[in-house]
Length: 309
Ligand SMILES: O=C(O)CCC(=O)C(=O)O
Image (cartoon, rainbow, N blue to C red; front, side, top):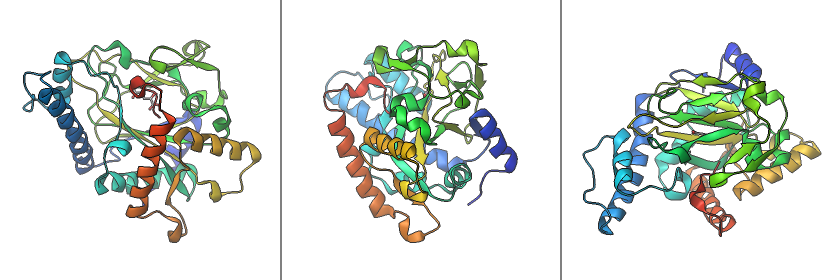
């Protein structure tokens, strides 16, 4: 499993994020696009059967189909958690992808756990609600998680730039500590301070195959998609398992808070001790626990509000 080079590691530590160029192969992207296409197909079939759409729009490209569907029937959700929707071995194999786990091990150490979150983010064209204000992911996870290192892995399934909604970061802001944020419209986090004045907003254009790794404390945001195609991306979150190291009291609280946020304790996907690593069946059982817990945790909350992380 290849890890990060020393200069990539230094860059991540310094900036709080890293774009790994060409970390994934075409076949990986085809797999993810295929899984998402299944969900788009289900969505289209449902609307069509309900008489809400004139056509299934099945000849549209991957980048266009949801945008075209959305022109007929507004798609309220800006995300789908694949873990909650699919039970496919391919999905779980992707969670253990060597390029991802190799890099994550360089950042977190040899013991790695997956939180269960595997989100798709269709940023629809000209859609004001697809804008993410500046935030730190720990503002969502809960204050005690600032003492943990949780790594987000963000993977574009189309080339992304300033026009279609690439991510922006404030490099180095992971060293500012956790700042105050409150939920605003659509339940999205809004940071009290105007942090873009303190840091230097930096766009992260990426090509298909690139992987972005970022820390739970780096400020990041995304702007509207001004093209006519959907900006598709997926993201996953990893952390060291709680047994990996003797945790301080603060880290223990952070770990408990993260587990409460996700409804399950993260599951080990890489370890020096092979017997600790979840196999496919255990990952599938974990995913169904995760789904059930998420469903009950979010009962009464608008699941379509875009808050999953
Ligand atoms: O995909 C986006 O536009 C925003 C993603 C984000 O904020 C996150 O993954 O934490």
